Length: 459
Image 1 (cartoon, rainbow, N blue to C red):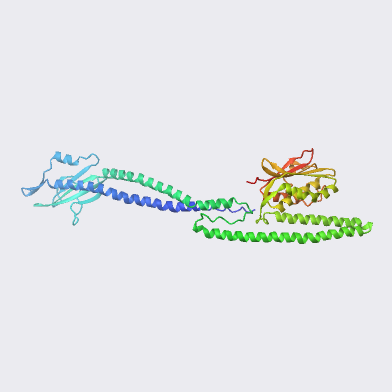
Image 2 (cartoon, one colour):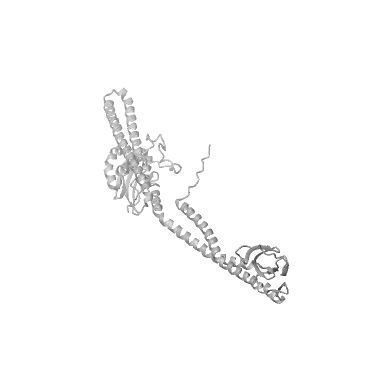
């Protein structure tokens, strides 16, 4: 046996919208942080560069050309102050025209000259550490002197981290706030579609009324109109099926009734030797008529044929009174005491279907109740809920069979009754169409069965 393929879950429209909005917002957050960081960090970096350049220019003021040679007036104390920094390490070097070291660190080489820029600022690495340096060129009587001042980048990195942290939290809060607003907006915007989906899912199978048009977005209107068109087609098809079944019932039952009447008359005229055979033909015709009637009733009461089900208030008490006379002759023929306790009980439903259900309940009780038995049909209210019940003192239904008696063509004991096994199946179909529940209870007698149909109260 092949395993049924798993159908992947379809993402909801709300999820799609949120994903389509969250991804651009996340990209926007990254881009915004990069741009904001650059804008915010540039003034700090410029300030550090300006201080670094000032140090280089200040050193240039200490260069003298005396006695035909270049000299640097940089006492040890002044150099120590220049190299002192709480955050970074400071380096300096002063080179003459022929790249002779005049002062400072011999391994700190200046950057090449750049036209139009003095001092020249650049990033680099010195003694295994990242540095930022400024190279300032000074023209003197002894030639061009290059002053280079450098420092490590710890304070710059610390300033960048503080700026990033200061920007990150507000931007994250802004994005979270935006997402919350987007979620609420999407949820509110899709609320009409959610309400429509809930209403459609909660509809009864036979409810073919038009879908609501109020508060539906314009984008969903074509879908609603298309669904209404399908509902109209379904309603028309169901109405045509109902009409066909009604006509078929009439066209089939009429010749069967005529055939039965002719057989009854013919059986009376036949000689005694042929009477048993004629009686069997007559009994078979009656069973055929009964089976045909029940098959058509089952088809008419089924969900497929009752998509268009017009409901109206029906009094179960009046239904019992109008149906009583149709069963008295059969009950008297079987010597069964058939009683009716008709109390008012209003339900919303189809009168012909409820009448068919009652007929099958009574017919089922008559078929399984022994001669001299008692059957009582009741209607009324139980805790404001309408009910219809049939009680008999027949053989009863075994507990292990109670879940099976409403299946089509199921019969408890074929030797007791010649029924078709469709009566209680029709009862269940009609009960389902009316949202009613079926209860099996013990009868008041030692044996027997009580079948109660409980309806919902009309609000």
